[in-house]
Amino acid sequence: MIITYQGGNYFKIQSGELAILIDPDNQRSYRGTQVIINTIKPPLTEAPEEGEAQPIWIENQGEYEVKGIRIRGWAAGYSEKEKRTHTVYKILFDEISIVILGYLTEPINPEIVSELSDADIVITPAHGAPLLALNAAAKLIRQMEPGIIIPSLYKDVKPFLKELDQTDVKPEEKLVIKKKDIIEKAMKVRVLG
Image 1 (cartoon, rainbow, N blue to C red):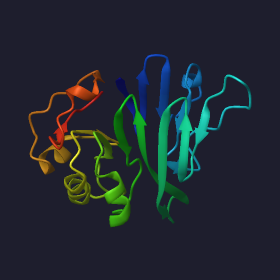
Image 2: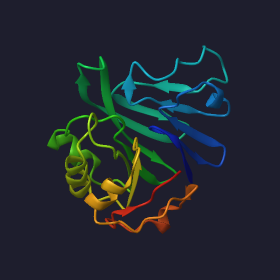
Image 3: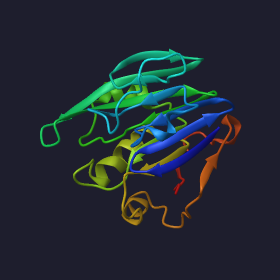
Image 4: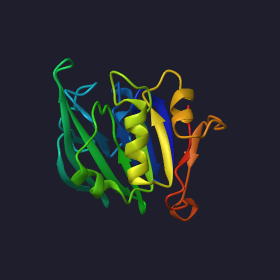
């Protein structure tokens, strides 16, 4: 599996011919993608037009399965200021469990946290206000205990790294990973960009 970061909360997760986009901010990258997941609604871009080769568009809570990729989403709040609903997702892809917290602005309820606690990888907002406060994000991550933590939506990642006591992390162009490479509950931060 290869995970690349495009900025904001825009990620591409690919394994072989299968690709997922998370919160894309343009339609140019839709080609060759099977699934597009939006953690906020209304999304940053428009859904592709109907057609055979178009990706599956997901923007609501629920359970989905596309070409062996299992996806489950939970409602995670509504921002009155932004007029957007937020959804957190858990993806099982290539035997790796990935949680996408997206544009989360407030802690999520304990029932949802327990559903997410077996994640191999967590992609989390790492900026602070107006998104989830850094100490709240760190507390949530500690409850989930993933093998790998990938920050998103940050301007300066250093305060987030300090909050997790991992200040020596060097940015990587992409994350190339297999299930066997993930150390359970290691909580290792990997900065992509």
